[in-house]
Length: 231
Ligand code: HEM
Image 1 (cartoon, rainbow, N blue to C red):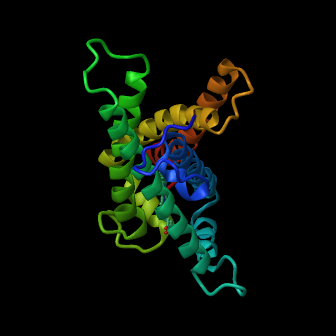
Image 2 (image 1 turned 120 degrees about the horizontal axis):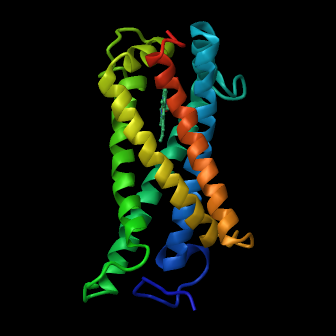
């Protein structure tokens, strides 16, 4: 039977999805996968930096004109942004309410750490690190507020940012957190959504490969600036 968090356990169906534990886990899984889709596309798009400033800036411009003439300029970008914000809020809300529910269901603290406790702690702190990273990253690349360059061009912002050692360190730590988050999150999402027909070992391997590939795909950009391959 589905465990219900609502005061009105009789309400069932899609409208009550957010009231049950499994429903909230599904919300976490689906919103996480939506954000993963963005992250993969963003990582691949960033690799355009290796083709030089004109191509990279042109790509950033293309993102703003995507969908034209059916859509007005930047509409596609704003639809994506709203989708990402909704996914982020839903993900956070489900994480926080599920944690509270877990704590309430366990009034007496465990003496020893329960199995999986480290993964939970890692996901929680990893999530907080990523949230802080996103705020800093937007100020750095999108708004340029903390970016060392005065330029509005994305290529100039990327190279200027990674000429500063503290940005390379912070982005490296954040990509480490992203890697751990995807590694455990993808595995959990697959289990929640019932994609666990594959063996646990192969699911774990797949999650690890995806997580490491994404982190390395992102990190190749700052380190290429550090080593002078991109300037
Ligand atoms: C080394 C790693 C990364 C680099 C070099 C990078 C680069 C960029 C650049 C240049 C922009 C501005 C694009 C534009 O104005 O057209 C941007 C925007 C953005 N990035 Fe990243 N990014 C990195 C990692 C990440 C990660 C890991 C995430 C998410 C976890 C992320 C999320 C975003 C978001 C949400 C935006 C704003 C998109 C928008 O609404 O315009 N980025 N990034």
